[in-house]
Image (tube, rainbow, N blue to C red; front, side, top):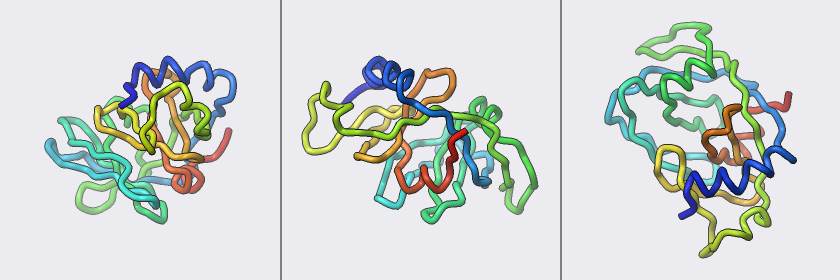
Length: 161
């Protein structure tokens, strides 16, 4: 599996040349996650990754056709979202305020890595993450991690700025 370090070393120059700035265009629902909660992130094309909540993490649900759920660290959540309205059972409706740099994945970008049928890499939370042609690779402005957003969900939730 390709590590985060290898992905960043390989892709940051490509992001610098071809990456574009994006911001979420849709609201999200979120609540504090219970430590130990296991979240399987499912997108329109299947299981993307798995993660286990730690103290302070937030459970986020995108308002997409797949209602994708994932975990976000507290410090990242505070940079990316602003509360608009409290909802029932600890949930809140949040406006996105953070930005990311996105790059549509082309398999030619992965020619430097050995592959066995599909390309998998280490997500920032250490689980395996798949990347397919047309998906988006994403880095925050700090460029300290890299992850995948499935193409359908990316197009439903992000706009170029």
